[in-house]
Image (cartoon, rainbow, N blue to C red; front, side, top):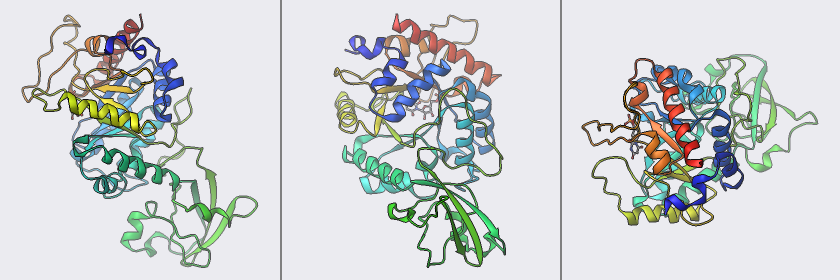
Length: 387
Ligand code: BMP
């Protein structure tokens, strides 16, 4: 079935025109621009290594996959923390961030895990994924949470302190931690929370009225006057770090849309995986029911089968034989259940779009050079698939 679907022989640039999800359309264009269908699985153990790796390998990849919960020293600060720094690197090198969280729970719980809590995954990860063993309603719950999140960022607020007295020290711990994360009370007659960063603030729709003709607004925070300027949300900049000065932005393409995307974990690479064909079929059904939120699948093969399907597929369990050996040779598993296939097989025969590579790159003597080797091989397999 997979071998006959039109998406298998359509260039990514063409698929960008018909994909239903804005982030999928963007990702296909980015792939075409960077000539890359490589995702780095950045499974290192410290925040420092993660950021350093992302900076070095960024030019070769279109997606960087994280497991934030295996990183020691992850800084949860929404403006200056690890998520924000990763987001800055994503802008600099032109890649999307995919948190491989594999959500699975009742809808209400996943909504909270996705949008709140310590990590606030939705703030910095363009993409995340879900195992839908708990049922398809979970996907709807996540889609609703993402839509609500997007609605609540109508404006990016830049705040500057014009009359200073003590600033952040005046706020209690909870305020300091969540200044950018919580809804701002903008009733001018009330005391206001102060945020001295340029991070996005959540404003309710009716709250924009009290801007003056310049689109600027003065207000009192405790005893400090602040000035805020507003930028429309279609300037899609999120979670900027404010300790890095002017940020470099990857040329050749605009910044990604604000939309968040979900991949359904439809098949796994591990030996003895218990996901049945019925489960995989349910993933495809759920994806079709939520085309505005589900970008596609983490799977071992293309699952596009209906004529209108144009889902994107990302596939882990990918490794190349060492340099110098037959590039299509067998690659042994890791002894802990992980199984590997080459980019040629996964992209060329199984029809996936993006290969996800972790240890194959991270454990190489020179990860950026190895990443380039994977990028070239995976891209070559894609071009060969197009015929
Ligand atoms: P590696 O290339 O080092 O084997 O890493 C694979 C990565 O992909 C890991 O982060 C793992 O959690 C993830 N992964 C996988 O290996 N198989 C799957 O089916 C789904 C995954 O998310």
